Length: 142
Image (cartoon, rainbow, N blue to C red; front, top):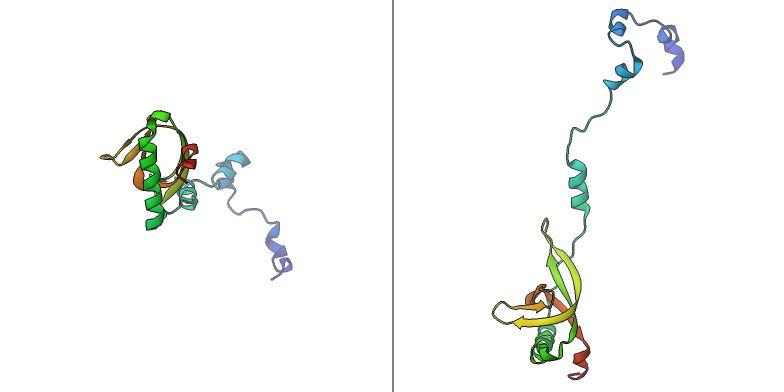
């Protein structure tokens, strides 16, 4: 179709001019066609779904044994106030998965019953969530 077929009606006046009196201002008339947020919260849900999380890695027996050896060594040398860096998994509160974070500081205690490590700022790290442990003291055992 081309515009030539409708040229006879293109410039015709609207047949019911009373309706146009109800909208004296063209901006008010246009406002009735403005978009609205029919799906409140949809944008936030899309962003949350797109947010990436990591899966918790399963450690092999060799790595678990090495971590256990390092934790025991740290426990025996807590009096030396070893500065330690621990990389561990933090589960996400809103979806499956989480992220790995690294905490660097001084270990106050290692609690076997609670199965966690407590830093001097009272940060608690579950032993089962630990991926890496690094400390200058490990030079002695390597």
